[in-house]
Amino acid sequence: MKQILQNSKIFAAALSLSPALLLAEPSTVVPVAEKKEEAMADKKADLEIVVTCNDSMQFDKKAIEVPVGKTIKLVLKNVGKAPKVAMGHNLVILKKDANLQEWAMKAMPAKDTEFIPSDEDSQKKLLAHTKLLGPDEEDAITFTITEAGEYEYFCSFPGHFALMKGKITAK
Image 1 (cartoon, one colour):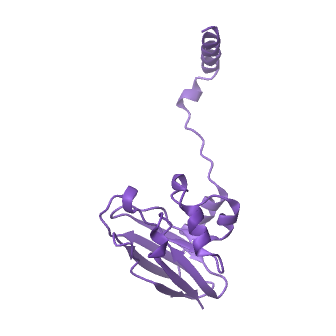
Image 2 (cartoon, one colour):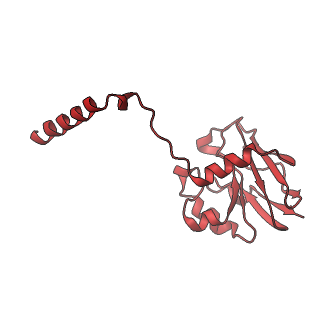
Image 3 (spheres, one colour):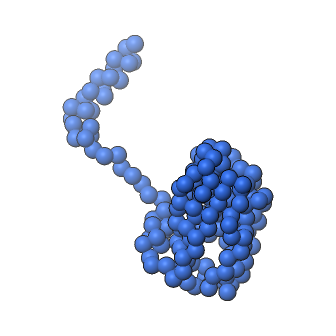
């Protein structure tokens, strides 16, 4: 009890010294990756692609062709009606030669980060991703592929990657 009283006195003293703390907005630290994505989102896209996904765990496009070096805006629209907790969808694009199955297995337990693993190895293999979408939601990502080749994309919601996947071919 004595410790609680002492802690509350210290807290009261700190507040009396700086009442502005009560009115101050909490600071927000934006990770470098998010700043990069925001900067790309502001850039005008050379090509816009719309992909829809649904409650049958399907993307409407299984193959996409893009020119190397061009800025691509990809819009993902969830046209399904099932709740996000049961049937959420995103679109994850991996860098060339990344292993989709290994990456997707790391994504399965990453619920707190919308099934995007935050470990350094996974982040290095990630080209771009949308946020996790519920019914009738959409999100856009802007990215540039600088090297010709095939890039896999998929939904990282647990179990979806087996059906919800495709390839982007950069030429």
